[in-house]
Length: 253
Image (tube, rainbow, N blue to C red; front, side):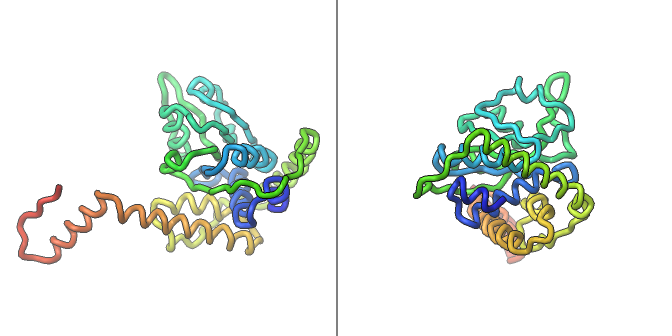
């Protein structure tokens, strides 16, 4: 899977490993607390190509050039499709639904029914869009000409991978369901998400190490962002004065 991504998208090994982890996680969303959400940052062409390649690797892939509320309402219950969305200007309402539907324990109710949008999701996105729940991967423009992936080749490759991934799911389903990776080094808000990315990687320490490094880096970034949040600064200041003593009133503005 990693060599396939590197060959047809010219990806660095670390980026290819991260995408392999996403594809594997999409195969087990029914037994994990949350489904993986991935934002592809970078040039449109490279993001579109990666989404197409993920369509060969992910479970029940649906490649979309655009999506609206009416389309989401047509998704069958328990389909758990992997939505690969090549549209950077989604309506805010649609974006909110897609981002809030990654926890399998909660449904999204709209009108007289509910939307069945749970499942792995990958977006072609701008940086300002990728500030919600989910992880991000920065793509660089390809420096060398890439081999052409014909429709026939794509179909053949997808059939081969899907058969192998189905067997992988059958063999490792219980193991992934019961996995308890060590999450102490991650910020609390990311722990369920990190489990969803790491648990499906079985018997491949090199891949797990590469993905773990990327996840730790994004956890450090999330922790740094919290320190610059005005609300966090005010809370830290309040705690400081509570323990200092000699102050009855604290003014915050």
